[in-house]
Image 1 (cartoon, one colour):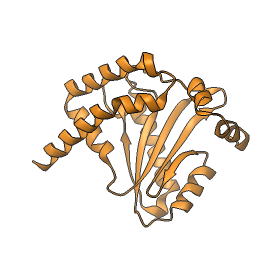
Image 2: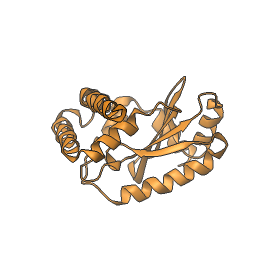
Image 3: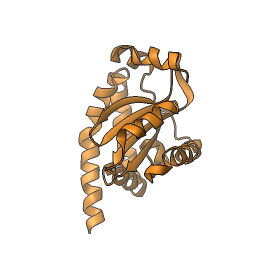
Image 4: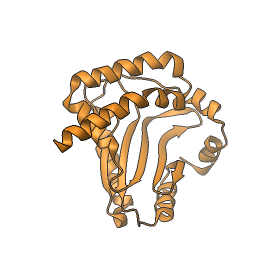
Amino acid sequence: MNQSDIDILKNMTLEELWELFPIVLATHNPEWKEWAADEIQLLTDLLADFIPTIHHIGSTAVPGIMAKPIVDILVEISDDSDWVEVKNIMESSGYICMSESVERMSFNKGYTPAGYADRVFHIHIHATGDNDEIFFRDYLVAHPDKAKEYEALKLSLLPKFKHNRDGYTEAKSDFINKVITSAKRNNNE
């Protein structure tokens, strides 16, 4: 993606972005695993100096359920890493920084002024150990009934939140938090 396209996207309001990039759920695509592996290799190479631990997370990592066709990847790096340098590497490699805080950054790839590209990624960079998403993924993979319950919840929310990503995410948070709590409890037993 060129800088002009990035600037167009960065200057759009949330409402404009949500209209251009509605929430869409797709039948599980086995290629998502391959796309994640390719992107993980790219990120491993880009961030090699930071010795990252990288995971495919989110619904695209859970076989058998519908998901937004956006591959989520968690990158864990040491909290004493040079986070400014990580951001610079990511942005100079075509990722768009969507948010950042003390020990978290979020990047998108595959968003264009014309809509979604063929492959879309959300890259979540967290400090090592900030990885509840792994507990969530692993629990859903191990409990297909709970995964289907999550799928049903997402499908029920879609009509109301198709153009409101924040509302969609918030409406799922109670379910996600309960699953993470169960997963951690099971992990400690």
